[in-house]
Length: 118
Length: 111
Image (cartoon, rainbow over all chains, first blue to last red; front, side):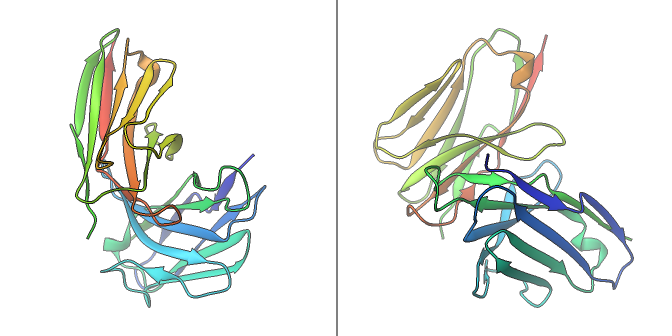
């Protein structure tokens, strides 16, 4: 149990276009999902906390108008990178917490999305 | 703000040897979690420590949470090639809060 999927796994886009990444909890309800960014051989940097039915909370330095987050249901959160530029190229990973289950404090990570902006 | 520091960033180990990675927080933590990320993969939860001075074991892995709840360690005995990957600690200042990840320790094992 506690599986999180992400789609797409890889995406290549042109500079100036927008890209949407989906994060789904497959077998549990996630009232909270987290979006991270990871550069090669570096740690995970928390970008924002996505709460179902309310606005996302962004970390300092993360542009909310550039990284749009929508958590419309208990199993789906989306991250849209708007007007992408080459510096947005990175590995984006989501995680979800199963607050309703016994493993409520554990984060379950999706497999990640590799974004390359040309 | 809260900072979580992890050392070493890189560890080269001979198969069969032991090693330890350390995690230190600038603030007192509510709990700390450890994750392992294999090359090309995503982080996988290993364990959570909540109590001051807590020690937990998983086979060859021993996790400790400091008395002051500001540091933690992961000790691996008799390293195997399957231990290759990056080990991250992640600390939270409250039970329901977000986690701050350390920089990770990349472990390379030589047969």
